[in-house]
Image (cartoon, rainbow, N blue to C red):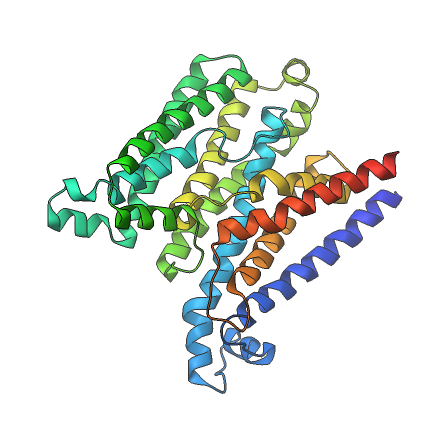
Length: 343
């Protein structure tokens, strides 16, 4: 009972924190905008400066929404993979989706010189890169789904996903070897991740994709709790394991694939946030972990985005670097602290 009260308090605290961080994310940047002006713009009023309103509506608001979607989607897909494979090191990209997306983008950016000029111009646009990333991750997804139908052993699917990742990474390496410095620079920038280049139409598509993935994940809460004690125990409870596994893989693929397509491969979040949620809420019940992982994932992504902007300066750090630099020490500290408390 005491633990339930504690978790309820933490949920309220993190929900309030998420709302506060949302306003902080929109406020801070090369130009600091007061909270009052943000609230006025978001509620249909007019900010005291037209430039502030333009920055809020056309740049910072879609970026903040993207950060929330990315944080939620990657965190939940990481939780799904860690429970399905019963492996604390599993993340959203263990199925090779990130590598597939990277391969699609590599073909467009690094192989653009082999295509006719008019075609390379179209493919090198932001929509062309997104399309290539989506196609790359979709091909790997279809391959993994086909393999999962044939294999009974879940760990074998994990190995297949890692092999797909290695295979596509090798092809990307070959393309990079024969590419120019300019092409390599473009591909490197994409691989560092970016939350700020999405139009409202792109944000809408990403919202729909992440929404579908999160809904499928929500329906998987009871099966995930059953899987905590192993596949055989889950089957003894009457769980259709093959169907459940397919839904979990499909949900993860939609989440990780769509996010990688629009924001690039974002490190750390999917791997670490589920562990942070377990340490903070002290539970393995997915009814609690699902919502806590959502809140923490969105909040941490907003914090990383604020830090990447370097408030007051015009320099922007790669979001991929910030998530790992900030996140890894936090997880290490939490694990050491937990160990001391147990000892």
